[in-house]
Length: 193
View 1: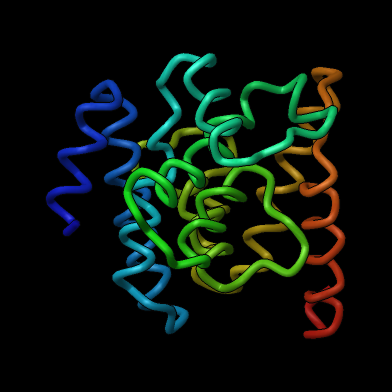
View 2: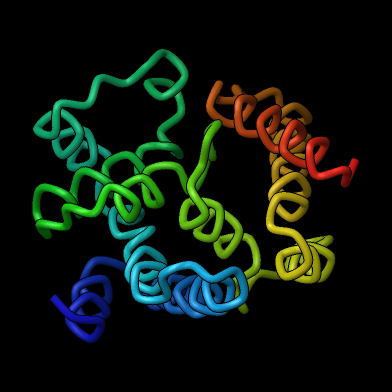
């Protein structure tokens, strides 16, 4: 499939607001990929498709994951907000036939992050925070950090997310904590902390 076919596909699968978000994430992903020397085409595809299962019914997400051999851990079972990323990674692999592990993982971990993320995974994670329609307290800081040091931007995003989840007494996936720790270690090694 090509870019216009992916855009048509997601337009059918989601409302206008989510579609605009996906287009904007793809745009931000391309800009970040160009800035950091990553594969621009892969960044655009992953950005377009990152939320491809966000607006389908939960039972459909569960079926996609079950058919794809996914076994949810305890936190994932109780946190349906994480399902779209997992189901999306299975959907692009099994239904759309995308075999590129980097694109698949970028979709899978765009909400939680994880330790040992590839550059493309970091780009999609960050692009989701800085897309043009985003309007939250600190978004301008996040956008600036995104083009200065992607790990610093990720740390800012992770701090925002972890703080929000703890304030609301919600679970934090171990992948997010591992991503946080990995990012701190990376920044320390670079002498940036």
